[in-house]
Amino acid sequence: MAGKPKKEQLAEADVRGAKYLKRVLALLGRLHDDATARDRAGNRTLFYDQYAALLLFAMFSPAVDSLRAVGQASALPKVRKLLGCPPGPGGRGYSLGSLSEAARVFDPDLLRGVIAELGKDLKPLATDPRLADVRGALTLVDGTLLKALPRLAASAWKTSRTGNPMHGWRMHCRLDLSLGTPAGVDVTDYRNSGDADERAVLRANLAAGRCYVMDRGYFAYALFDAIVAAASDYVCRVKQHLAFAVTQERPVTPAAKEAGVVRDAVVTAGDGRRAGRRAGHPVRLVWVEVDVAPRAARGGGSGKPQGPPRRETLILATNQLDLPAELVAVVYRHRWAVELFFRFFKQTLGCRHLFSDDPGGVAIQCYCAVIACMLLALWTGRKADRATWRMLGWFMAGLADEADVLAHVSRPDNRGVKLRAKEELWKKLGY
Image (cartoon, rainbow, N blue to C red; front, side, top):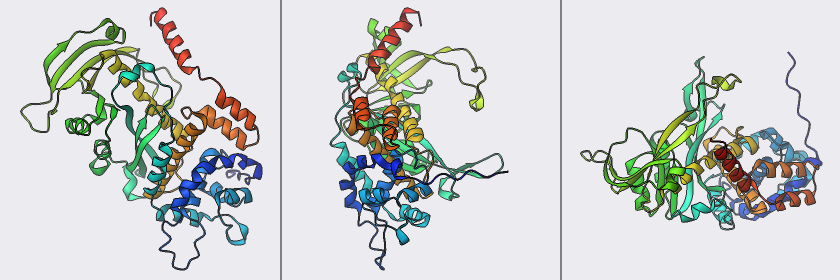
């Protein structure tokens, strides 16, 4: 059987848009001396700022889709001049060995400082005007699995049917809805326990002045109390068999009924007889009826969906007692924005393929992807999306010029208007 065809070598025309990385190079330059103390021979040629810049370049160039392609790109004079990378032996780019070793020796936490600096320049994006009444910055919390092939005991989370170990890492994300970029990212092993438990990771990174929006996997009274103690708020979906005692039954307004709210009550949540199994503050529960689409066929096939559409009641818990019930439902609906970010992160920025099998290397790639999303938001003034990334990719390939990019960025964003018109149409049709 014939092997896979070899990919063509990168050409100068593939890297036209590399100048867009200049904005962040000054910040990355602060990381230049990291891990140089161990280089007693003084012959290191690949430094932290150069390695991070190469990863960022790969995320904005569709032609650079592997670590080998990163090495090829580093051999191009234009890329070396832009990123400040000295040529390798014989004028060649960095070897696979150098790139692999870089992921293991550089400190990924130093990129958090770069992310914090870029975050100061971000401007709030246009969002749902109804969310202006919500106290605190809406922060959508979730985690996603980053599958990998390396044979690492630390990342092995289960075995396949044939007994081969399967590996992966979990990225914990706190997405700021108003900015369209993550407010924080942490990478742990896949096991959702101990220090890698998603609730423990969130609790260790709580900030004041936020409203954390979570799914029921984050349900824990200790976490709810910690969020309140950190001067923040939460909206979290909870389990149907939640134990509680009603202290105030609230009337459901017509506006709340239109949003699907069927009940609104302030309760004492948890088992009052057992310490740690109850909330230390008044909890508000809002019951919301939603339409659930039938599940897709198993295995990702094109068969018929399993089961008919059904009506399901969600129970949302929050500590915001004065927020209208319909807005509690709206806040939770926006939680799906973090799922869209994960899709953009994996499919568009290419993070389904990990360049390193080292925990530090995985974290560096994740942090560079966050920086890439921030750069898109800074350049365009809007949420990072595939259309903008595609336009920049065409520019890098020479299929579009600067005027085309500026025209795309300046185009009015009517997505919100179109979505509202679509919702009104469905309501008129009785759906």
